[in-house]
Each structure stands twice: as structure tokens, then as C-alpha cells.
Image (tube, rainbow over all chains, first blue to last red):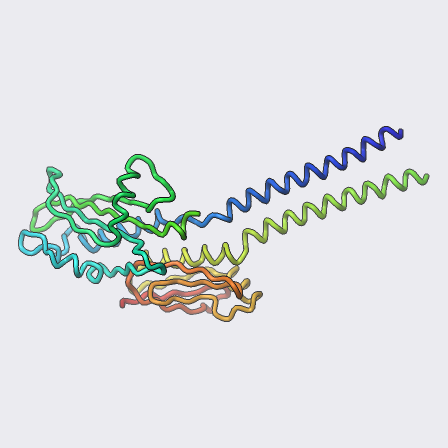
Length: 169
Length: 125
């Protein structure tokens, strides 16, 4: 009888050791889950691509400001943000966005391209062609067809979002 | 007789300690999920993304009941600010989280008549 009582006490000590181990496990799991920020850059870069696509070509017709006759209008780069109603100022001093718009003909030969934003992000996108690395800027590429005076063009929009500190720990 | 009473008391203490442990764990989990830091980040990012996806003239309603309640509990007078293209949510005295949006629009917001709802009005700049 005495031995049984001793075993019971020992069991309850082990029971509390197990409970503390479980509590420690849950605490570390919850901390690792809530301790990381939500990464919304994929959604954000998709929205940026859509907005640029709507600005470059609306209803399948290319924005007339982009061309000067048959050539690319070099001034469009300067009015790009205003024309597309974009604001790339962010809370930090670094530029956190990069966009590149490239025009191809139907044989996929590059005709011209223009870009805006933080040029350092280009290397991030090259590195992530095969595999995505969370700690680098998020790159998104979209392609669509559009027309100008019955001529068809393939347009590629690359949008990159930095903001690593706010989205990745 | 005395030993029986002793066993009952021991068992009761054991069960009570287990219950205390479980309730502390449940409270911890609930508090983590609805804490100011988590809500501030999620609201700021949600609002920034909603504004990014909106076109001028859009009217967006967002349920922020939990945030309003938490701000009231923590005596925060102004829980939300939108300056230029920066959304800032503050649900505790020392906290605050900001996230920027790229859409060049003017955003006004106000509390809806319905409890817990905020209305965002997106206008052309």
C-alpha cells in the first residue's frame, strides 16, 4: 500500500513535468507563428501589376502617351507615376518598389522597355528565377497582348516589392 | 477513514492544478491571437491592400470591431490615421503599426452607423 502511494506521488511529479513541456512547446509554436509578420507582398505585387497593366493598356488599346508616332515616347518615363496614379514614397527612406514594362512584337523580339524605382531589385529577381527566397524582394511577372492601330504587341510587366522588414522576419 | 479523506484532498488539488494550468494556457492562446500588435499589423496591411485595389469613387466597408474594442479598452483616442500614402493603426498607448500603399488617391474614412464598421471613401487626387 505504501509503495503504491509513493508511485502515485512520483507519477504526479512526472505529470507536471509533462505539462510544463507541453506548455513550453505550445508557447514556442505560438511565438513562432505570431512573431512573424504577415507577408502580403505577393498580393501587393499582383495589384501593382494589374494597376500598371490598366494604365499601359485599357480595354486592349495601348495608352497613346506611350508612343510618339511609331517610336517610344521617352517622356513617358517622366510622367509614368502621374499618368498611372502611383505613389512610390514609403515610410522608410529606401525605395521599396521597382517596375519594368517591356514591349515585344509577335515574334517575341524586344522592341523597347522602360523602368522605374529601385534598380537594385533587378538582381533579386534574377536570383529568384528558379526558387523564391523570402528574404529578398518579391518579384512578379505578367504578360498580356494589346494593340495600337491594329498592330499587336506583347507587353511584359515586372513589378517588384521590397518591404522585407515589414513582411519577413 | 483519515487516509480516504487524504486521498480525496490530494486528488482535488491535482485536478485543480491541472485546471489552472489549462485555463492559463487557453488565456495565453486567446490573448496572443487578439493582441494589439497582431491586430495593428493585420488592419494596417488589410487597409493598405484594399486602397491599392480600389479605384477612385470606391466606398469600402471594413469590420474593425475587435480593434475598436481594444482601442477603447486601452484608452486610445485616435486608432487610425491615413497621411499621404501611409496607413497607421494604433490600438495601445505605446504601440502603432504603419504600412504604405502605392495607389495615388485621397482616402477619407469615418465610423459607420453600424457598430464596429469603418467606411473608407477613395477619391481621385
